[in-house]
Image (cartoon, rainbow, N blue to C red; front, side, top):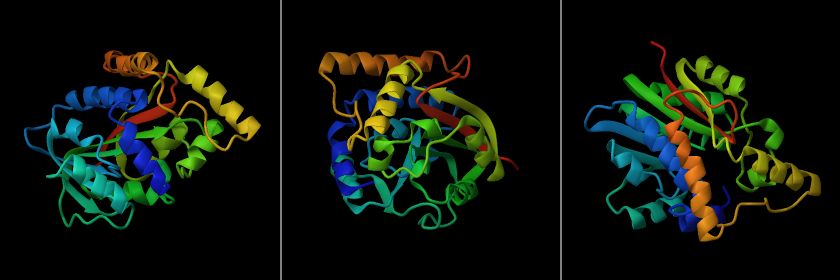
Length: 244
């Protein structure tokens, strides 16, 4: 991402509805994994550290982030964080460590060689370990928002499954998330593309009441996901294990 994007992220990720709603969905998914006490957890592409407090509820967290400014922001918020400089797929300073849970939250779309990245991640999984990943959905929505964030691509459900499988991972769960807001977001993204807007619509912090409503709508999906996969949504969420 461009350097200023990390500053923007640090300023809003505690409160913005998208980050707040996603954390609630992710927390529900991780809680249902039944990780052992003190589980070894790795977040790759940890940004400015907005997920570390959540992840630390479930185990001991190591983070990898390529951007120096983002690492500094993380340490300012979490002074004892184990955060290391590195990037996917070939610069992961972790030695021979293995992890019970590896998290890539809206990271894979930034990596040029996503197939190699998934292969590298698989090698870091402990026996029985789980990869939890989120990515933006629908190639048709690729536009100014993605370009501003330096996304290489968006994903289709079948394509993501194929990439995970090709990396030697067994897909346990693959669902869309952020479903209720898809129609509005789709209309805004297509308008941005058609009008060739330099900045994507709907990315600013909304007024507090609207922000709370949107966070509640997104976060409420944690009540649905234990029972079934969502058939559409702005993002995809996958749980996968090493296929030994």
